[in-house]
Structure formats: structure tokens, C-alpha cells
Image (cartoon, rainbow, N blue to C red; front, side):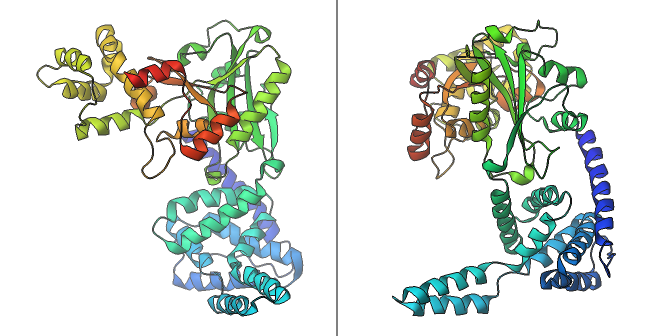
Length: 473
């Protein structure tokens, strides 16, 4: 799947470069630049002059688009080092500090004069706008320019760590994208087997929770007892931004292998009482931190409720992606009281002289224990109890948010922690991340707002009576 994504990306970059070559040559005097891949100093100076020409805006809109297209084409042709140098140069076109200082002084001097204060505030806002924001906006006007900027931010996030200039550029780009990708501009679409092939291919490539094993698997996930919805932006009509896969079943599902079994009989969606959200994927890394996942869930619940009035439960079947790393860390620290006395005794019997915690650490590291019914049953109580603690009580340092990212997402959206499911995903990924456990987050429509406010305000996690019982053990 990774190879397919890489091949698709290379083809897209080549197509975009050709498209922008046409745009770059469309204006009289449009310059076709050519830089060495690593952007040496001589080329960097030529690039600086081209960026200045873009900012000056001479020649009207067509010329501006041509210059921006030439810049974009060259960026796509550069090596990783060349792109870093390109972006650092762009980030250097920041606010004029003297102008900002003058505007600040004017604001301070305005005193109680309303007209002078309002004028000074407007001047300060203008002074604080970095010129590189105008460069970014020029890319937006190009064919597929919005997608280019989304991908650009994805690269920037990897480069910006420890670099103040690039961090500021990444922040500005995030703010621009957040405005352009306001939920009011997004369109919810149901994806079916008859959707465009290019969209189906991207769904397969972007699925990161439960990898899609070919076209047959995808067709199974789009059958009559399944639904797949995605958000799209009008400027990226063939690029899903975020998508959710739903199974229409009776009762809350507790095993992903059974849910995705291609040989299982197709259910009657009209008889379903539960919608299971079993995979939610952010498809564009460049939009990380720009939240519209909660709107997706709400919109999908509305759509499903209209289509299937008998649905009464809306729940997830989710992984606990940080559970195993958290437990390994706790075992390495030797936390006192991590295991209960009864758990100590049963694990010591399996230890071969290692002790209870040593035995558990060895089993967790090994991963084959799930194939041994006796060992699996021995681990069931301690791992389920510790998983409940991890999801409901462990928080990020200095924050009120859940340590587990999937838990934080659903708790922020007003869900409650409903049920832990033993050996619900015994795939290699499921064992490595979650030790085979999966969790149901339940969206009770009359509790969502209360749960959201409680979690957002105080960090309090809504839990079912079953989870509460595990936490008291």
C-alpha cells in the first residue's frame, strides 16, 4: 500500500509540474526558472529576486499567476535540502519590524482618541501580516494550488522543529488553511462502489486503521450493510479530507475480524439497531490540527438516522494505539501497585523465576501469548483492568486531555467509554499497539453535549458502569 501511495504521489507531482509549466508560460515574459536540486547560494539569490517579483505584483493577475506557477514548479523539482532552503528563504519575508514598532507606538500614543486608536489598530494589523502570506495565497490561485499548499504544510511540519522561521511559516499556513477549510465549505459525500475510481483508489491508499486488502475487501466495505462517508472541499474535489467507515449491525460489535470478514453473510440494514464506526481516517496530513472530525461524525449520525430510523445506538470499535507502549513504560519503571495481589500470584506461576512483572513484560514483548488459551485467560483480567485505567485516567502531562489520541478524539466529541473487548484485534498491528484489545465509545445523543462540556472543561471522562467497575478493582 505504501508503494502505491508513493507511485501515485510521483505521478501527481509530474502532472502538476506539467500543468504549472503551461501556466508559467501563459503570460508575456513569463520566466521558466531552473535551479539545482539542492538550491546552492547562487540559485538562492535568483530565487529571492523571483519571490520579490511575485510580491511586487507587476503585470497584473495573469503575470502574478505565471510567476507563482514558476516558483511552484521549481519547488516540486528540488531535493529535500533544496525544499528546506526554499522555505527558509520564503520565511525570511516576514513582517517589517520597524513598521510594526512604529504602528505599536502609534497605538500607544492614541490614548482615548477613538478615531486615532482604531486607525492605529488597523495599521498594526496590516504591519503584522507577513509578506510570505501573500506568496502562499498566490499558490492558492493556481490549478490544484490548494492541494499543493496542504502537501506543503505536511512537509513543513517535519522541517520546522527547532527552526523558529519555519515554525512561524507553518503557523501562518495552518491559519490560512483553517480559514479555507472551514466546515461550512465542506461537502459530505457517501462513497459507493460506483464512485470515481480515482476516489476509491485514494480511500484504499489513505486507510490507516484497518488496511484494505485489495478491491474485494473494499467492495465488502461498501456493501449494502456498510456505509462510507467522506468530507470533500470544492477546490479538492477528488481528494477525501477525512472519512469514516460504518457497519450497520444488531448490537454493539466487539470483534473487528468478524466485522470485516468477507465471507460473513450480508446483513439487512433495515433490521440494524446499531451503527458501528470502525475506522476514521484523516487523509491529509497537511490538515493535522484543523479539526472537522467531530462535524463528520455529527453529519453521518444525521444521515444514518434519516435513512434508518430504527438505529438507536451509535458506537465505535476503536483501537487503543498507545496502550502497549504505555504498559511497557510502566513495567520498566517498576510502578508499585501496578498489579493486584491475585494478578501477582497468577503471573508468578508463569514467570519461570522472573517474577510477576518480569513475566508480564516478557509476554507483552513476545506477542505470541494470544495463541495460548491458558496464558491468554491469565492475562485477560490484568490487561483489561489496566486498559480501562489507561483510557479513562491517564492524561498528558500538564493537560486535562486523555493520553490516548483516539480516546481524546472521541471524548472531545462527547462519547463515553462503554466497553473493552478482549482479543478483538489479534492482527500484528492490533497486538503491537493495543495488545489485542479494542474499545467501544458510545455516542448517546442525549448525553453528547454534557459529556463534551465536562471533558473539555475539567477533563472528566464519561464511563459506563462496566468500565467504572474495572476502575474500582
